[in-house]
Amino acid sequence: MAAILVIDDDGAVRKLIAMILERAQHRVVEAADGIKGLKAFKAASFDLVITDLIMPEKEGLETIRELRLDGGEVRILAISGGFPGNPIDILDMARSLGADAALGKPFTPDALLAEVDRLLAPPPA
Image (cartoon, rainbow, N blue to C red; front, side, top):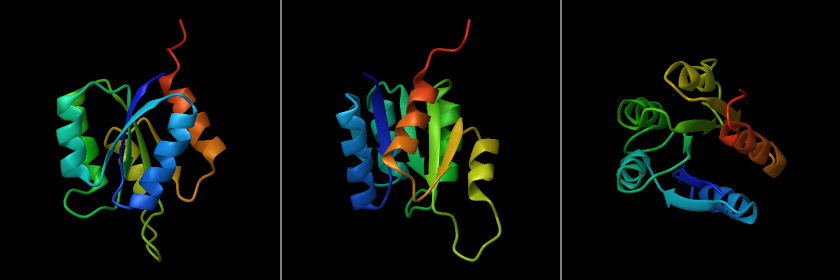
């Protein structure tokens, strides 16, 4: 069981991700934006942070940058549906700023759990 922080401004998406993770026996803390997410991150210990990239208040790219400055080694999974009609690959930008992995929305529960399991697996010896 891992402690996972889920940051997403869409309450329905955030609840769905939390439900999927809790069914897989993970402990989940939810935050509605990057400001609340960073506050939660500083208040507790997490094994993984899942953050949306496009959010009001504090967007995900800035949140990832601050997590890397403050959190060092925490694993980060960036999620996003991207900018409709925009050719910029925001998921690649997230990886370049320190996300360990990125997953495009929409994704299946199996894809989410596979990525979470991969990120939480101990490094090979």
